[in-house]
Image (cartoon, rainbow, N blue to C red; front, side, top):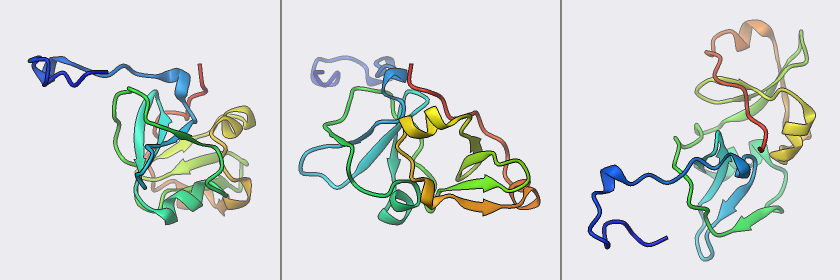
Length: 137
């Protein structure tokens, strides 16, 4: 897509689309180290390798290039997967806790099941509940 500024467009009126069809995919531009994951149809930067390995086992599955999707907030430094021991519910834990409703969605994101940390309900209660992690649609 051409740069809207180069075409004389006002950047405040040009928005990239929300891309729910890419939910769960990870992207890296050729020649760059930054990795992005699509959640809620938006690109979210994975801020460091520690956060990356808290969520994924390997670099396998990275897609080359960056889709033209709206940008979202970066993932929180140190975000990780947590299972509530009392219920078995698995969350993406960062600024909030976001429930991963089922294994189909978990697998769409290629999350690492071995990286899940068990946490009690009392520990997880300190986090506000964010929206559920959405499936790819």
